[in-house]
Length: 94
Length: 487
Image 1 (cartoon, each protein chain N blue to C red):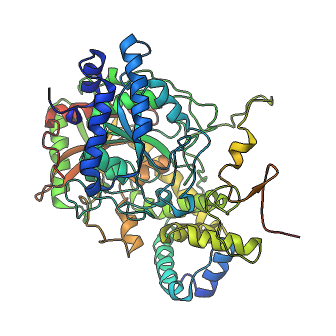
Image 2 (cartoon, one colour):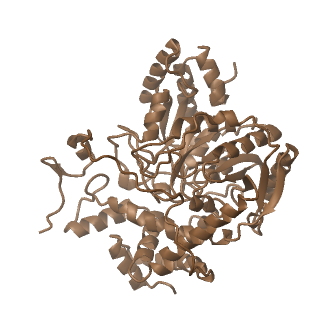
């Protein structure tokens, strides 16, 4: 096995997800199948190969640092599950 | 006059321009068609009839004054529900965005509006474009117009099924690993994934940012070129947007194939390739040869590693992109939670479907401490090898010709419980995204039981014109589809 149920639980915590005990077994098996499949990349010697993170050789596109019109706050907040005084409301953190 | 919904975009444009028909009449014909046919196909998630009729009135004013009329003025289109449309719900096929109404338009929506195109509604898709059958939509599956028990492909299944069932004149989809080309192939329509950077991604909900690209789905190659004209071009709101502007792709269509060399990648003709698919694809290649193209065999030796590479890179990027769905700024927030962490976890666990969770988990795992080199870095290196394969192949040929998928459309339910089998249906489309090159699916025949088969053409970066030239010549050689399915 490439991945165990307890590792799945740890990764789920990192990903901010949780799984029912009933679904976790099936999930572990499916993830394991996928990880076994992708491990075929180990067959290739890539020691001297540079990684590609982007298909095109692009450089950062920077615009001038100047004030431009942006969407009004009400519009930005219009999809928020909870809002108050021009801000997003989140559960108390401290 | 033949039925309005049977006309291609350029045919519609000709009669709209001559005022033989109004944009309102065309739009009504399509809304009617949606009412009659879409309950069986279920390509649409949202139909925007009122907005469409208002846009049609506006288009008619422009057509009447011959003011700023383009080939898309008054043309009714469908838009994949991953593209932000101001004031119109945009769900990405997910429950987590069930009530999301974007306060802004994607750049391509502004472009379409500037052309006076009409939006009929938003089209179904696999949740967050993750899937190959549209069965991962949190709302409902879409049915293939050629056989209602089969999938239209995915993730742009709604975009392909709507064009094939003629519930829109053309549509837009997005393609991260084959999500335009594979459904286009399964539904017998033309689907183009442009070179990375050709079409602005501003307002396209992100899945895997280094692979995602928007492209057109249409009934024929000419319509494809017209749609590409409208949506391509530099956008300073997308930092990966390329600045190559070709104003009219239709100009390339009628060039002959005299100086063209077609490369046939031998790794795409493997065991597991359906015999009907192989026969049709080879027939199409011979047709192109008889049109004057040279045909040579080429090799893309790392093809067999593309799916594994993709299923590390795409989930890694997705796991990062999808962290924004946290119940704070937009989308779902569950009602009962104990604290902030509990709110995040419950919201995401209830809001995302199984395939999205699988990919977030794979991505989080492969990027987590201790695994980065073995997975993400390794995959990024293999991506270089795959890209290099294409560069070498294009030293010997102009355009590669191959199947789009190993089989024609599979049955609904056939692969849904086996994610890995589902992933392998994208084996021939994924390499194109990894290399960032353009690819097109063009109908090239039917299986013995009447299902469409697509030929895939691939070219070097920004060589869309070559793809369209070869695709158009193939259309001339094989003839256009005349017997659209009657769902």
